[in-house]
Image (cartoon, rainbow, N blue to C red; front, side, top):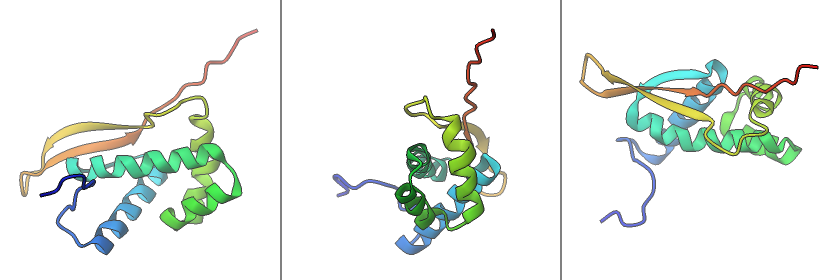
Length: 125
């Protein structure tokens, strides 16, 4: 029984699953939207939300923690300089999952996971 066990196995061993999720979260921050299966998108959401929360802190320790997951310095720079500032006033809900239907080859349910757009209200004086 799987009582109190979190996360999906996604048909992979732990090291493959971890590497796949790291690659996917890096691609998500690089392109700001990716298309994948629904199960992978739901697992990716947790990791992506954690990375955005780290970028909102903005200190050196948070940057080093993000580097252990992302492994691409350009993406980490984009995450801390652009994405973290975009969500500074928001307390959660940084990603959105849109269901797209089924994949043609194997009938797997697909989804689009993207970063939500936060528009800062600009006071006009």
